[in-house]
Length: 196
Picture (tube, rainbow, N blue to C red):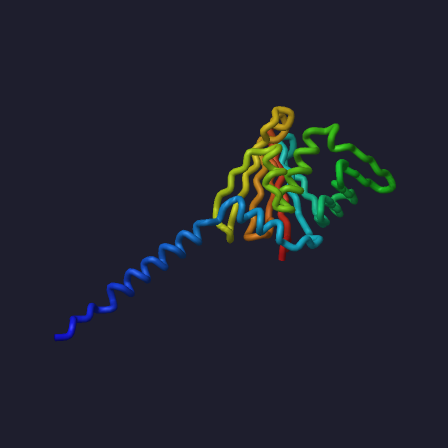
């Protein structure tokens, strides 16, 4: 007498359930390490931005626009075209502000707030969690296709001015940077086409 064969469907069902579980675990594995990898691998084009600054002293937000550029390893350049021409360049250990024919240089090491802000931009754009952690407590929420990274300053010299910075995006692309000041004022920068 031949041994009876078990139906294949229970085995197939078990394999299907295992595959679903593995896929579910992989889909949930978006974490800070993965985000930093995506940001580090993203292209660094010059992209247009629009920014709104909200203040309790003003009836309407102040609007500005221009381009934002990042050149590895550490240069961030914000070229404001409206409402006036200004250029901000963070490079090495200094901030260069250019207005018309005038140029002002500020060493980041002498300005803790500027240093922390430069670290937040560089850390996000290069995917450097270690640099970010030197100044901020990091909290990531969302998933790869729609994430938000919250940066809360750790130093009292910074928390006097900045309550938190919220960076949001998709995969390796930064779409928005919001800075919430301790005074209640805030600025929101929308970045078009970053990382594409």
